[in-house]
Length: 106
Image (cartoon, rainbow, N blue to C red):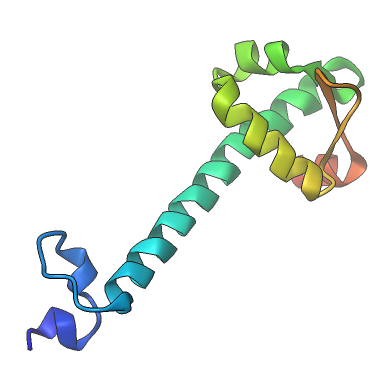
């Protein structure tokens, strides 16, 4: 047994033979961490753009133009921020920064 396998670090070597669910779990949690980091990175851009907008409200096309984030990435992030109550949907094309969201930007 190698040291990587002994300490559960065999996932560091992508060419290592897969031995059970430990490797898959470690890779899955790492993917989840990367997804969360991406949500945070894009979310910060969205929150700051909304904070700078008049009435703290912007349409999706404005957010795309100002942040450079593609619509495919923007929609899941806005949905996540809405679940946190940091933004709210004004209509199907506009979102507004809430007080809770504004507190996160400050």
